[in-house]
View 1 (cartoon, rainbow, N blue to C red):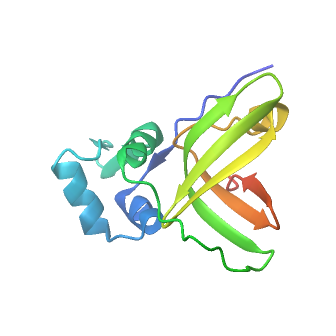
View 2: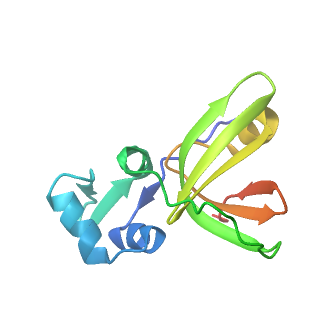
Length: 138
């Protein structure tokens, strides 16, 4: 069996879309050293998913209203995984999708099959009280 190690990276425009800011803001954060980035051999600036997850984890908690409105069962929130905690049976996955912070509890087996890691781009599909984590197709 061959194991493929994913090293997710993002362009400033992708990070901007995820965070709801302009690409110029993301570039400025990189230049100021707030967000780690590197040059990708002539292809422009890239941000490593682990560095993005670390940056998001240092930010204030995402806004969470005191009362939650009734929502459609087809709500999807795309963001960056900031935390994955696994034990013998379950895994807790936290996704930062401004202005939301979503937490999903799933079986460890499911988290392992998806190979969920901080820094990965994922979508939380919210149906009733369940949060389903999906990865974009490669």
